[in-house]
Length: 360
Image 1 (cartoon, rainbow, N blue to C red):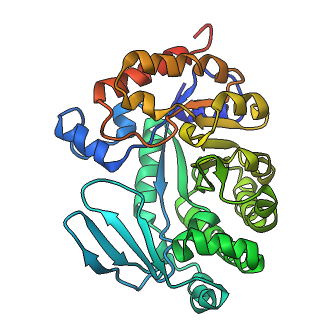
Image 2: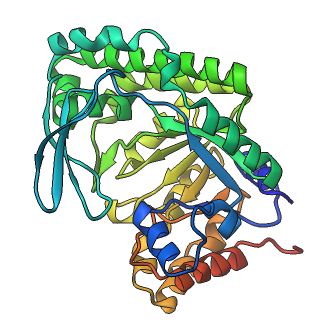
């Protein structure tokens, strides 16, 4: 069974030979494992580890495509810059991190009106046609499931105005945030139409949409339904109209939102961050008849580099969540460079051994 066949069947809850396999890594990890000689320079992680799927991030969603980022401050360890969203962000120089939010030009509706026009037309410059075409063809040759990947509306909005301004807006001026969400939703779909008509359709769609933090979503379910769900349905309905299944990634605790995300049309939830409070086994029990799952394996077990701890994490979850033919092996977050290469290989071997179905 090819990876494409396997993932297609898992997303449909149809019988397969084993659970699926995919993973994300911090950039530091590939550099470290390459420096150690485990991976060839430039080698695809999907090829190296035999993943069942791969992806391409095809769109640039920064508001002002013509703006050149400017460094506004630099220290030995960090660099602070102004980007095309009018956002001032601080990044660490020596390792991969989520950027620190320093300031934003867009703080309320009036600021949004100044940049809204930049997002109304689907500028072809936003689309990486060449690499979409290349990775799509690589997946075809390797028999892998290929997904278009990119951000949905929540992950478009907060780089423009910051989480704090966005969430205050959801409470005090929900129509403003609704307008931002639908503006981005229409832009995403129009760009997809251009790309897919010229370069062909992927096998599926993968949306990044980090709507939670430790112990809570960023919003109530009522706010999700009233403000974000119409935009989610708009983007997901387009995918479904083309027969494309939709995987949605969301870090943080999003369990209260999940029934409504399912209403929006997602086919698979990815990440299920353990340290944020997400419980893969519980979610599989509650919603396994409705969606598939990818992730939920505590990456801290891998970071321990203790195979007994890796065994324990896998053994308490995989035999349960593989029931229903709807699970893809993945950690609950990107794999950091502190995970030893041999122990990551062991994680794959052990996980797939537990994830085989009887008779295969």
